[in-house]
Length: 460
Ligand code: NDP
Image 1 (cartoon, helix red, strand yellow):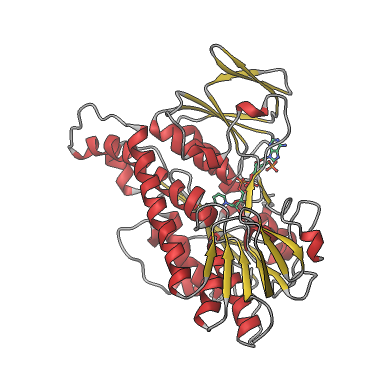
Image 2 (cartoon, protein in one colour; image 1 turned 90 degrees about the vertical axis):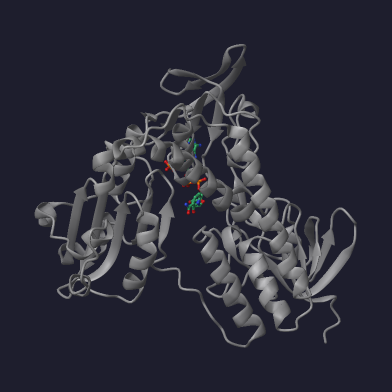
């Protein structure tokens, strides 16, 4: 046994930290974990979980409207924000309790306070003033919302605040075109708020396949979201009638609530990483190798704090790989390729692998693209205008599937399954050899035809 207080000390009880802490404790290691907020991290407390409940909440509004086409009459459906908000918080607290229990039941010590580096093996627990030492330290502190330093920025909120809003805003302005902006625009529009989404670019969801980006623009419009492109806010003023936001094109928007969904940054600014000799990049992301090891050999980092692929399941896999590497003498580098993910717009987006643009830039003429677009059966009787879009990108004569892009009902569920096929490097012929399940949305994936303009199109 080493002279340190702990074999492993984990900073941050989020998805990655808890997985690593639990697995190490189960191996009989002496594990300490510090968490300044509720255990569970961004995903459970102020991210994926409460957000998905809001999405479900908004979807019920559509379901009620759609039901009329199926013969149901629904009188005077009303929505009460406080009921949904409080139900979500109750569930968040329950889940957070499970995260604490998981650690404690496996013998880890959970410190409900902030930890900061004193040196490469020593941490100060800020509230109690206690000092702990550890042979290995894992940084798993995640990230937090970031917003530009505009005049009046104190009048705005970030995604963390959404889950505690005292009232549902009548009008909401969302700044940003990424995941969080698109998801919350869909949620609040679905709940009955008048939503304006203002983005500095010309197409939502930067980095996604171009056709997906266009489809998401269309679905936001169909959901009643007022999209304003190519503008950036310059100032926010509070007036008696609400907030007035000025933009760089001279325009102004009046609203009740401004959500800054302008990105997230790793939470390393007050961690004291320099005292431990841990290098961070200009955005504050801890720099790690393929095994999540930092520039200080006994210190590792997983999850959003490393700004690799900022998704919960990735942090969990990185945490598990870290334990294999450090405590089981089995070096494992988590493979960050072909990670399936979803954007919970309404309906959602499901993506795995390369966009058409990236594929064409890398493989040129060796790329073949298959697409389809249709109105799903359920929406026809409902009079619901939402459509489904599907794209399969293949490469080479063998037509290995290297990208699948879905927009529409159940896309998030479908992409999890398709992700297996992509990871297994299956070909278009394998997809075609798979018999359809009828009548479903998913069956279209095994019956796709090449896009006619395929050879001539380069989509960025
Ligand atoms: P994103 O990077 O997705 O989006 C940030 C948006 O803010 C972009 O549209 C960006 O524009 C814009 N922006 C950045 N700086 C400024 C500025 N100074 N002024 C105006 N606009 C600006 O970040 P999110 O915070 O939405 O999400 C962070 C990450 O969290 C995601 O990348 C994802 O990894 C994860 N996440 C995953 C979810 C899921 O799996 N469903 C849900 C939510 C988050 P531009 O595009 O031009 O750079």
